[in-house]
Image (cartoon, rainbow, N blue to C red; front, side):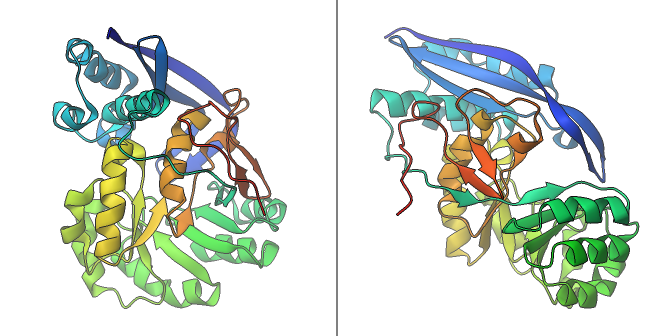
Amino acid sequence: MLRELRTRIESFPLATPFRISRGVRTVAEVVEVTVEAGGVFGRGEAVPYARYGETLESVTKQVEGIRDAFGKGLTRTELQQSLPAGAARNAVDCALWDLESKLGEAPTTLCGLKPVATALTIGIDTPDAMGRQAKRLANAPVVKVKLDAGDVEACLRAIRHAAPNPDLIVDPNESWDIKLLQSLQPLLEELRVAFVEQPLPSSEDARLAELVRRVPVCADESCHTSDDLDRLSGLYDIVNIKLDKTGGLTEAFRLLQAAREKKFGIMVGCMISSSLSIVPALQIAMQADYIDLDGPVWLKNDRTGGVSVKDGWMMPPEPGFWGTAEAVPLL
C-alpha cells in the first residue's frame, strides 16, 4: 500500500494577546502533518516550543527526515525510536493514530468523547484587569491563572474575589523561587487554590524537598515522558501530560499508566493550538483529574468541525474530525 507523508505550517491569529511569565503571544503557529495510505488520510498537529529549543523549521526538518522510512512502512512503534519526544514526533504519532483508527488498525479503540470541564486561562496582567477577566469566568468550573513573581497576592485576591466558586490553578511557568513559594503557602490555602503548576525552574526541582506544602504541586516543564517519573517522585504530587512533550498519544498513554501506578495525580494540558492538537489529548482527558485544553479558545478562528467551549465545558468535535471515536450523548 502506497504511503505518503506531508507537512504544512499554519498560523492562527489569537483573538487577544496571551501573556505568561516568558512573554506574549499573538499568533499560534503549528506544524500540521498529513499521512495517507490507500486513499485514507490521518492528521496530526504540533506546536514547536522555544522553551525546548524547537522552531517551525526544526520540527518540519525532523518530520521530513523520516519521509522515506514512512514510505517504507514505518510503524508507530518504530517512530518512538526514530524521533525523540517532542513536537515533531507528536504530529506524526497523532496522524498515525488517526489513520490507523480510520483503517480499523488501531491497537485499542479510541474511547467515546463526552463534554468535559476544561480550565479557562487568565493571562498575566494588572490585578484589576485580571479581576475583570475572572468576573467573566465566574461561572466556569475551573480557572487557571498565569503569574510571574510580581503582585502575586494582589492578583490572586482580585481573581478570587471576582470568581469565588471556580477551582483555581496557579501557573507561574517556572518564575518563582523556593522562598516565594514557601511564603505563599498560607495565601494559596486561604484562597482555595487546587494546586500550583511548575512554580520553580525545572533545574531546581530538588528544592521542592524543602517545601512545607499546604497545596499540591504539579510538574509541567519537569515532566515529559514516563522516564521522568522516578526523579519526580516525592517532589511533585501531579504531572501535566502534554502531547507536544510526550511526543504523541502513544507515549502519553504510557505516561498516564505509569503515573497512576506511582500515585501521581493526572493533569492533561496543551499549548495554544487548534482543535487538531486538542482532540487526541481528549483521550487522556477522559482519564485525567484535571483538564486544561482551552488552547483553541484563544484563537480568532479554529479549524472547521473542531471542539467548542461554553462556560468552561468543552464539547466534542464533529464526527470524522479526528479518529473514529463518536461523541457520547449526555444522559
